[in-house]
Every structure is written in C-alpha cells, then in structure tokens.
Image (cartoon, rainbow, N blue to C red; front, top):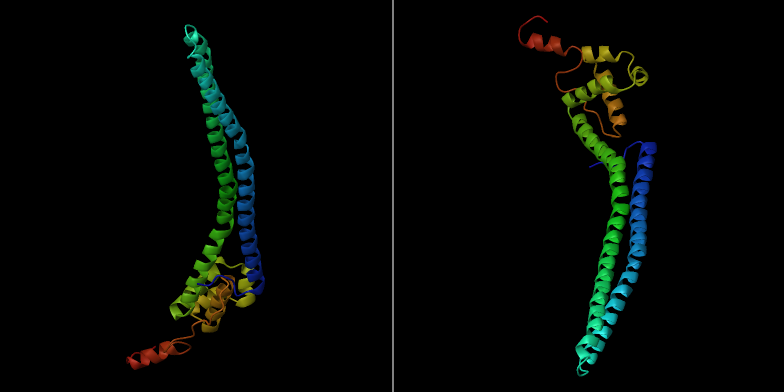
Length: 224
C-alpha cells in the first residue's frame, strides 16, 4: 500500500500532517493524564473525611460502651454517645461517597480530554490518508492494463481542471473519441500524478494503433 505521494511537495505535506496528528494525540493524552491526576488528588479530602468519621465513630462507640458499665445510669449516659457514633458513621459514608464521585469525575474528564481530540484528528487526518492510499492503489492497478489506462484517461477528462487538460493534450475529447494512444497515455499519466502515483502507463496492445482496423478487416476478407 502506498502511504505517501510520489510528488515531493505533496509527500512533504503528508509527513507534516502525520507528525502533527501524532503530536496532537500524544499531547492530548499527556494533558488528560495531568488533569485526571489533579482532579483525583482532590479525593484525598474525601478520604480524610472518611478517616475522621470512622475514627470519631470508633471513639464515641468505645466511650459509650465504657459508660454503659456504670451501674444504674450507664445505659442512659451511653446512649447519646452511641447516637453520636451513628452520626460519625454517616460522616464517614459521606467521605466515601465524595471520594468515589471525585474518582469518577477524574476518570470521565480525563477520558474526554484525550478521546475527543483523538476522534477529531482521526476524522480530519486518518480518513483523507485512507482515501489517498485507496485511490493510489486503485490507480496503480488500473495503469497496468490498457483498459484501465483508458479509464484513467476518462477520469482525467471528467475530473481534472481544464487548464491542466489542455496543457497535457490539445484536444482531450478528440483523443478519447479517436483512441489516440499518445493522448490517452498522457491523460492517464495526468490522472496518476493527481493521485500521487508514479508507475508506467500501459502501452498499446497487440493489433492496436494506426491502421489496426484496416489490418483486421483485411484478415477477415472484408474491406475496411
């Protein structure tokens, strides 16, 4: 598969585009990682809340258990500590939820920061590069046969700017209509250059060229 044009200027631009695309993707991934880590670092605050809530809950629960051992008034004195321990558990749960939310946010933002630029680069860069490679391969295959060469010549007449056509062949339509071999080869070569392909164009096959029709008619015993 041909990845770069045979024309030096076009090939240079393709190399520049490839380097720019790779650099853009690499920078996007690096920025995404930095932003993800920065956001994820905020999760430390949630973990601190979780640790504080867990520790506070344990302390209050232990204090309640200790006070519960006091005769007569133990249960009444211990209950507020047990209630406060439950509130501390809620605080720890809130810290856990905050940490999970921050981690999810970090992952989402980080992924978006590299995925969106990468998709844009692929649309702007990869699709044209694939179209070029496909066109170059198809054009090179056509150039190997006389029929394919004629198709390339027709494509040149249909798609190439008039100025280029007239600079290549004085009368492109007449060259197509009369089967002018030099004109067809020139038009096919023009289309190949436009596709960025440099291959030899198929020449006339056996029994082609000026006078071929007369020779064929004579062999069959008919007048041309």
